[in-house]
Image (cartoon, rainbow, N blue to C red; front, side):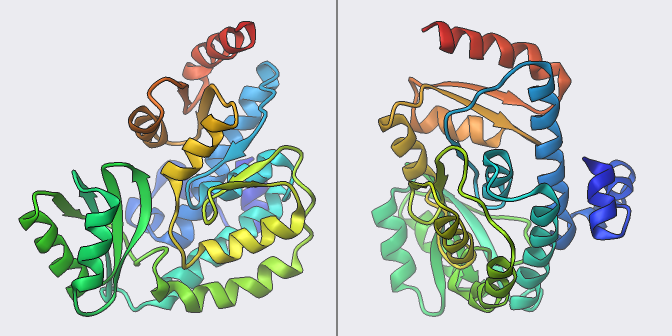
Length: 282
């Protein structure tokens, strides 16, 4: 998968992933294709060893592209090209240092949205991760002031080390640029429902997939709502595929009764196989 990504991009993304430098890898134009490639590589390796047979898919922000590759909506090569452009457009939409993001803990949705609305300038809730974890983004001063007011109200707020205010309305220029790229690519109807970020609901057609990926750029990631919708629709086991265990941690705070397993590499395959066998037996 890494060799294919190198060929598609015309550069050694694999060397950057495995050797660095880390600062260059952290640039969102590189991070996005790197995470996509690592996620799809793990999924393909997992599927080679035993039939994963997933019923639905979803991805958090960038992860929605991995979900579409898994569902057959989009080819891996087209997805790599697309997320490289997505990263470039997002970085270029707001001059470096003009935007910020902050994670807010121990504050519910109503409080976060109210304080964001009261603060001068642009600051918005952009990731609804769990009932008590919401990310805000916007102009640096507005994010800072909102964070201070949230702390006064008893919440915790910490600035995130990101290069742009992702999923805020400041990303509208990036959305406009990405629209043409998405619309020109061939999409297929997904083989399984894809629960999309912007609506926290499943889509089953190519047109819906394109529309959701375009709108996603400058609109909130409704992850908590997406997970709740999947559970309500009968999902009992979630398999997190790719770098990190963040989504499994979020799931523990959303659907405490749902099964979950994180697969970052071959060392996690046995646990995944056991979890899948148990879910099928149930």
